Image (tube, rainbow, N blue to C red; front, side, top):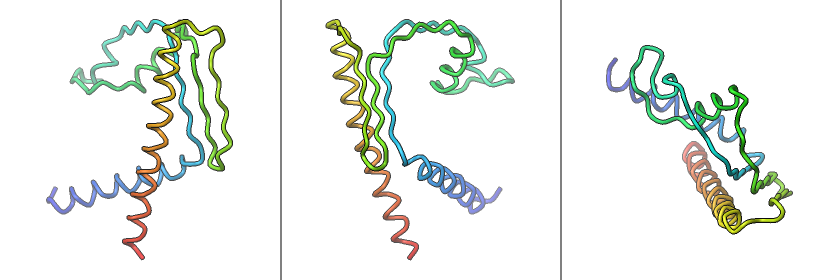
Length: 131
C-alpha cells in the first residue's frame, strides 16, 4: 500500500471515530466502583492467534461481566445530559477509603468534562476548516 493510501485510510478511520464520538456527545456518564477484580484468561491479553495485544479494559470488563461473578460496589455515579440535566449518586455511610474514591470520582467527572470541551473545540476547528 502506498504511503498516500495509508494516510487516506488513517484519516478515514479518524473521521469515522470523530463521527461516532459526535453521536455520543448527548450525555456524559462517570461511574466509580470499588471491589476486587480477578482476571483469568489468556484470551484477554492475546489475539486469537496468540500474539500479544495491548491492555484493553473494555475487553476485560466485558469478559468479567460474562463470568457473572463480579462483586463491585458503586461508590459514585454521575450522569450529565447535553442540556446540563445532571444525576449524581454517592454511596451512603462512606468509609474513609470511600471518601477518597468519591474525591477521585469528582476529579474524573471534571477531567471528562474538560476532555469533552477539548474534543468539541477540535470538531469546531475541523468544521471551520471545511467551510
